[in-house]
Image 1: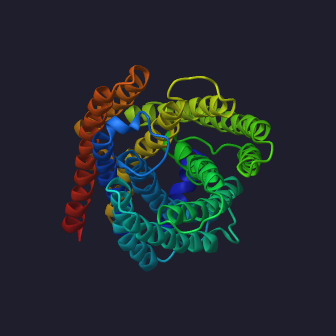
Image 2: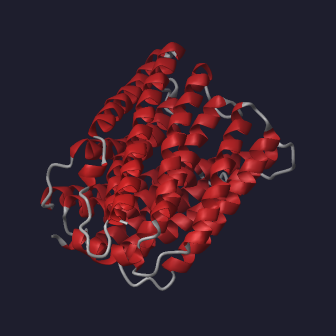
Image 3: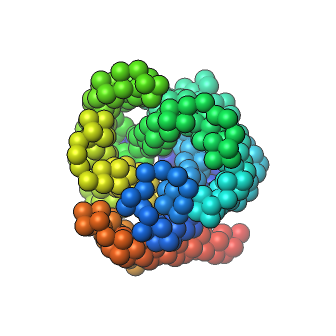
Length: 428
């Protein structure tokens, strides 16, 4: 086995969290995925012209970002960061408590946005922020003194710093919706739109990819200097974009930030391409088609960010940008990885002293994943057609297709967890 795969397997078993501590985060992400598409269907008529404000488009967005991406980040970060740092996994009791608070808080926040009920929104936002602060404290403790994989560790530190900016800007925006005095709403929006997808979610996804892609492709880990160079360029881009958010030379700094972000993405994607080309496992199936769609979405989102910075006269440019950065990049990447991570972790947990682990393929459900794949691709294509044609009907139909795919992904998740429970009972 390659260095990347063996390094993970050699260290992961001793750092595994209890099965349901991690897997409940991924199960909740699958459910929020379905709810996000339903919310988008409810607000499809407003989505194409959406430029801020409360309503179901904003609720759908946050069901994706907090419900799917955030929930996955909490679970995957807690399990994978200790592998990178070679330190013990964080406390499962606190992680379990975070899940029990975070899950209803995201639902309350989304309902407050969609209904709309600003007090519900504010209550959910405060609870979500507290959960992220608790999780962030666990990650800081784990990253501090980490002895392995400095590239992944650097991405983790930067993601946590970005999370602080995201939480501060989010609470400021929640205050404005309650009618409370809050400084600089436009600045808070600009910071939130940069540091949430590109800072916290983006850098965490890029960093964990240095573990996951070599592990599943059975390839060597990318060179540390390339990982650190990509992270450094991304940090520079975030700092420039953050400065621009305060109105300081906004156009010039945003263009420079996008240029640095493009260089960071190019280095990262070159490393990922090398891992896939040199890995011993070449056939990675539909899951890595989704991952590649995600990488294409990353590139497209930077081009569209440049168009926004230069104010190109493109109809519904904000909708195109949102589709690229959330739908194509982050959501496709996360769903592609989740369908690998879930059966892999379940297989590791089904193993024990004196017994072989079942294969991940024996715990999965390929038919459900096939339905999900085609529905996901169809939904993204349908949303693109809806933007191009400015058609609310197409947007509603696309959201319905996306919901069908999300239901299939819930089916897959339930099968994996059910088969894990069955094997655990049989072997106990």
